[in-house]
Image 1 (cartoon, helix red, strand yellow):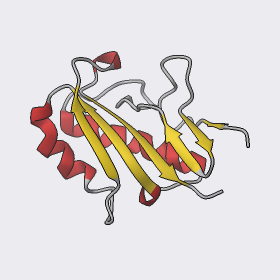
Image 2: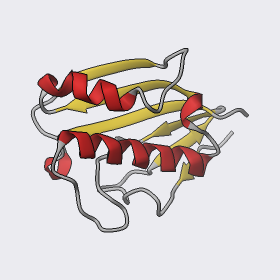
Image 3: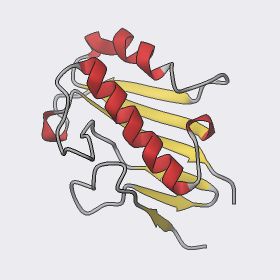
Image 4: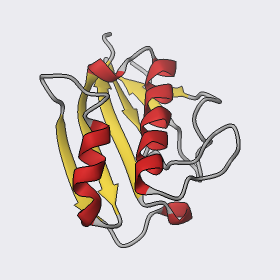
Length: 127
């Protein structure tokens, strides 16, 4: 079984030599998505707007792979300020349903392009 690259214009292009996502073995693995608006190439300023944009980007890549947010089994959320955890949780909870996917949330010193948040996801999309 070969890995299949996933790409969509509805999410920002990769910032380096990687795919927006890879489908393998019934799963899709997204790259770390930053909150760049794919239409404008710009990034919102607030953590609230960045969180909404990064979720839109992850969702767009999942849809391009044939998956939906309900298919997410694991996410990793990277924040430059763990003090925004509650704000991010409030927005994140709008796209996930019970049973909630497993998740890791960590504070990092920097994210590419000066973003405040980056998210990657693993979803089950069948065989």
